[in-house]
Image (cartoon, helix red, strand yellow):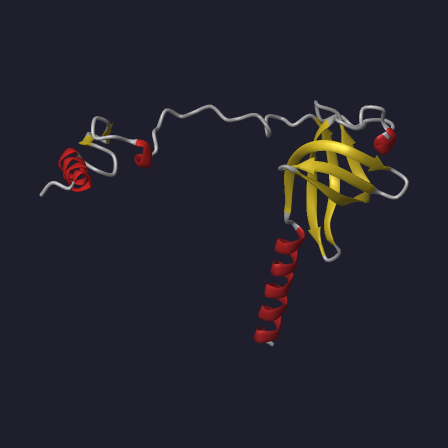
Length: 149
């Protein structure tokens, strides 16, 4: 009896975890067909075709629902949007459309760190000289390239 109960609990936990798999993607509307529930969106350099859930939430930039839903005049070709996708057995389904990209497409500011591969012997990292090669190593590599012993 304990094994059966444990198996049922594990199956329920896995089902809940898989059903809660949602993520957001920012893109540009190419075409939206409210009648058939189809969305053609430009994401990461490619046009992608998505199915829209019948109960999709259509929100403005502030997160308030648009009264016309998918028929809203703001949802036109070229509009920047953020969509929420849900993984279902039939594939990825759009469950929410929000106007604007909420900073998702803008480049992020640098945090001031330099990659080790771009560091030279004159740079320091955590108080240590050089990036991946220190001065002696850089000199030895330079001499080897020149053909010197």
